[in-house]
Image (cartoon, rainbow, N blue to C red; front, side, top):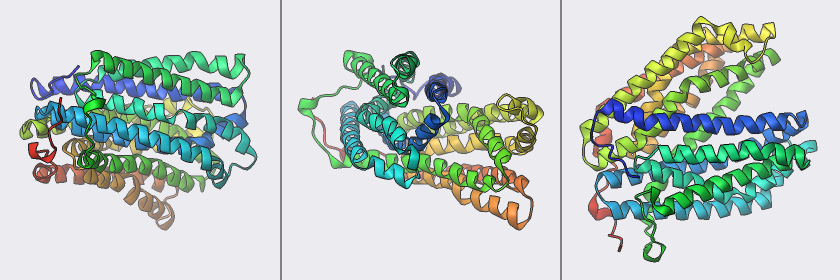
Length: 453
């Protein structure tokens, strides 16, 4: 149900809104881990085939997630402005976009999927990889709708309901994976079927809950009036948000290629380090996703000062959490690396990473939260710029420069991270403090015609 995020203690509002988001992210990670564990037990070729499909799946999820962020931001600002019918109308447009994009991705995937896998170098793994991806494409519509309905709940300040339905989908996947993969002997295709069914269960469950009144947003198909301006507002935030997610994946790929120059053990250590980084930034990501509806509602209610204070408070909390995790990694690096691998050279590379990069974890917490604040205000391009600054513009050239021009080797690659994190965090924070976001992207009553109830 709708929650008013424009009143009450700011810190409490942030934490209460963010905790379900953090738990939902943990559940989502669990969903992926379970799949990887079961597929890994089939064969090395099986996990390689699924790994080939992952970048394509990530692109679809990035588009869905981006449109979801756009829907959350727009709906939250309408709710804050007490424009209930316009919030309903924005939700209807977001669902329409989800359905259309889901169908488009399914058709394009089924027609060109194999060719894309070949371009990625599938070769001997093509049939196995297509066994997985071909099934996944058939469930794209359900994924899109699932994500968008989650985003509608978040736009009205309800982060507990999406968490509950994420748990339902994950538990379903955990139960179905061994049944389809091993009991029915379907292997990789069985893993895909289990994933699609779990997404369908999650989608049907959350849509049913939505229609039965768990949300205060109302969908009225008979009274729906298509308005391109609403879609434009959603996509104006959604597309940059999607690009930001894609850029992070691209950055990881390029940095992995740079690290590969130093050998297999360096690659293994970097892979472990990325997973540890993900744990450290999890609270910041939850806070960022919570900030979007908080900032949105307060902007809509014209409580600009409260919106600004919320951004600073969330950034402070994120810096403390991420910084504390970074301190643990810094103090006990070999212990954390050895959880994943006990090879001495892997541990050495991993320790060298954890003695440098975690020093800047507090700054990544700040950067992520300020980016979320920009999304909440509707300044998606600004958010995209500071994300690109952190993951592409600074870190990749710095890694090449320090490693190969200044001959610092792998240590130079590691130092590229804290330097880029510091610069991007400070610059995004200072830009937010200028207050230019206060003058743009506000929703006004006259922008969208009233929707007949």
